[in-house]
Image 1 (cartoon, helix red, strand yellow):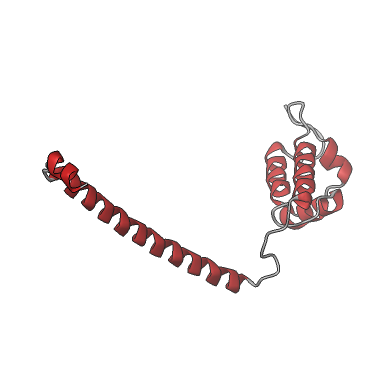
Image 2 (cartoon, rainbow, N blue to C red):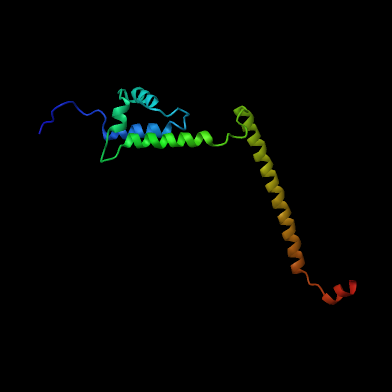
Amino acid sequence: MSKLGRKEILTDDLAKKICKMIERMPDASIPINWVNVSTHVARQFHHRFNRQILSQKEWQGRKLISEAFHEAKSIQKRMQFDPAPKYQTSPRSLLQSRIVQLEAKILALQDELEFIRAQQLDSLDVFLNTRCDLQALLKKI
């Protein structure tokens, strides 16, 4: 059987790749709109599709690209309302040096805590293993 007409460009495989690209857009801080989606599709996959084709094409009864677009749009809206990080304006190198200082402080405190625990366990062990006459202790009190 021969198929007449033009070969299909927007296939299921290409649609899945486009969906993955759309899902990564909010993480890359790219505004989610159909113009950006079609522009990025043209750059990455070398095919220019308009909004109508991208949003209405169905595979197995599902509009995969449209679903991915709406999901990414909701993620973008959620990210806009999330609070900004505490050190948003600080340069990255300062933040990394602060992280290194805090990690060193944590390690020093853990070593100190381990040393104190060992001392307390030793004193408890000495107390439990020594024989002590209760009558003599009562006379001292």
